[in-house]
Image (cartoon, rainbow, N blue to C red; front, side, top):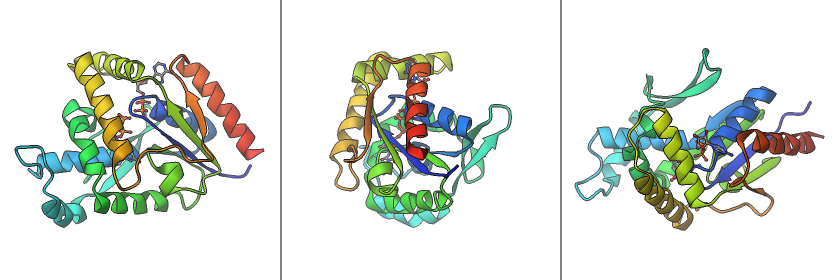
Length: 229
Ligand SMILES: Nc1ncnc2c1ncn2[C@@H]1O[C@H](COP(=O)(O)OP(=O)(O)O)[C@@H](O)[C@H]1O
Ligand SMILES: Nc1ccn([C@@H]2O[C@H](COP(=O)(O)OP(=O)(O)O)[C@@H](O)[C@H]2O)c(=O)n1
């Protein structure tokens, strides 16, 4: 069967990674979580004092340090899912903290950061057979992707999902703080000057506010089958 590129974009915490990861697992494709890459650069910047006391990024210093940031994905054989590594350290958990979530959209708006990460993402798709999720996959990274999905859900539903996830992992979280963060990131991601979050003209939209994980998975599998027919 022909191999294709599947681009899944959409708003924060709506289930993109869940859909992308499960589909890739089922059809034997590589899965790439591009949000994890922006989160890894953010973690590096936080650890290396590249934000000032007002929360602004020192872009000159970050530009100099980009060469020291190496991001990779390594399969966890127990879960069958890839995990994120920053300079050979497993940071899969650490990149999901509220602190990283509260800084990541500023980092993702910087043109040289996007340029570097987009180049790596395009490299990963050279052989096709790839499911990639993010904000600009169908518009900028792979505008020629054979299947493009744009996922939405209400901000309240998305904040609740993220809250439940953090609670289940034992990470302290507050619903109102998460809701505020989700809305803030939606705003910054949709209004930045470089590659703002928007639906590609040829993307299929899915509002999954009232769908279960199993239902959205069935829907996605149908779209995949149509695309490879
Ligand atoms: N349809 C759904 N119904 C309920 N929870 C969902 C659904 N889809 C995903 N989730 C859960 O919502 C949380 C956020 O999903 P995730 O895939 O990380 O979103 P995104 O990649 O868009 O940020 C996860 O805990 C996931 O298990
Ligand atoms: N392709 C991408 C992926 C993520 N991002 C940025 O990275 C942040 C984190 O992405 P994510 O997918 O991990 O976020 P969640 O939806 O999982 O909360 C987003 O809010 C965007 O600012 C981006 O700009 N472009």
